[in-house]
Each structure stands twice: as structure tokens, then as C-alpha cells.
Length: 267
Image 1: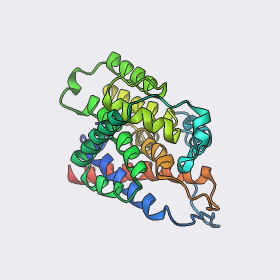
Image 2: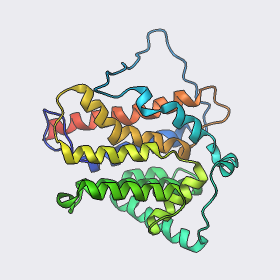
Image 3: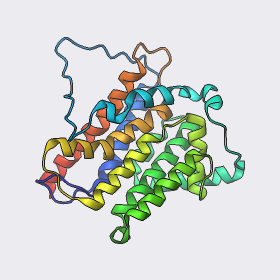
Image 4: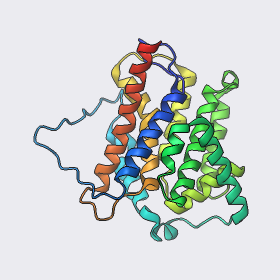
């Protein structure tokens, strides 16, 4: 994505997103075996609820996303009853995941190293998610971005729906289709990332913090929400799924804000 805040030139969002993924993978993997407990301290900071010009928790539907994705946490069989598995050839899927791995290793080297801390099944799933995000980002930040039209984004969103319906259009889509069936990913964060791509085709500067905050949700917060079910949550943790999803959401937004501030200094 290529949008900026009003004080900055075009930030290197592709590089920024790679660093966001790296932090999420490394932090989540390091804590995956720990009993996560997030008590609220007396003087803890509570992020403000933004006006309708910005992003509200209700707009993100964080409760719905957390409830849906938690059904298949830790590769539970509960997800199987929620969505039927697509019938995809095992050798075909192996090739699909391998291609996703290569995309991740080439374009997000630090993040890729972090994924190696995960189990084999989770590695493949996070590679599939990353490959889709990379391809989505390339629509508006790649060599052919100048000719991307609203109709092309409409078609990409239709392909996303096909993935979640179990009907992939190509081999890379097949990897995400299989991942969705195993981890019960919610479609909304993926759709919201495409909304961010639409924003990139319409504007390149933001007038206030509320607009910037919304952009950072599309660019980084969505990645956090996609990642939680793949990373997994400790079933013995006393932390609620809601609090973990909130933390992932704000981590993604915070990292994106930090990366934009870094770009202001560099550019």
C-alpha cells in the first residue's frame, strides 16, 4: 500500500508490512508455550474510541472475528463442522504451499526466519496468508499499479470470496483455501485489507490522525487479526480471546504507525 500521512512522502509500505509480520511471528511464537495473562493495571492506558470519521471497535467486528476464529484454535476439529473441507489433491497442495514459502522467503526474509519457529502446519498456513497479502499489496504497490482499476479490485475481492467458498482460482489461492478450512479464518480482515487498497487508489495523504489510524488498521491491524488463529492461543491461558485479539489488532496498528514515523525521518 502506498498511502501516506500529510507530513510524509510515500512510505515503503511493503518493507514496513514485512517488519510488522516479523514482530508478530517472533512475539507470538515466543509466547506460544507460555500462560498468557493480561491483567488490567489501575493506570493502564485505554485507546480512545474514534468518531465515525475514524475506526470504531464495532466497525472492526472484533468480537465476531474472535468468536469465529477461536472455534478452530489449535487445529481443533470444531472447525470441520463449521466449514466443509475442499477436496484438493495432496501433491497439488504441497506444491501450492512450497510456492507460498518461496514468496515469503524472497520478500520477507526476517519474517520468514520467524515462521520457522512455528510447527510445520502453522508454517504452511502463515506462508499462505502472507502470499495472499503480498499479492494484494502488489495490486497497488507493484510495477503494474498504474493500471489497476476499481474493477480489478472488485475481481480480486470476488476471488477472495471464491477462496472462502472452497473454489480457488489458481495454485496460490489453493494454499489459502486449505488454510481457511483448517484454521477457520474470518474473511473480514482480508476484505478490509482490500479496502485499504481502494484507499490507495483514491488518496495519498490524510488530513488528521483519525484518518491515519483507519489506514493503519487496513495496513497492519488486519494482519494481526489474520495471524492469531494460525499462531494459536494457549488453552490454559487466563486471558480471554477478546483481549488477545485486541492486543493483536493494536500491535499491528502500533507497528504501522511506528513505521510511518520512521519513514518521515528517512524521507
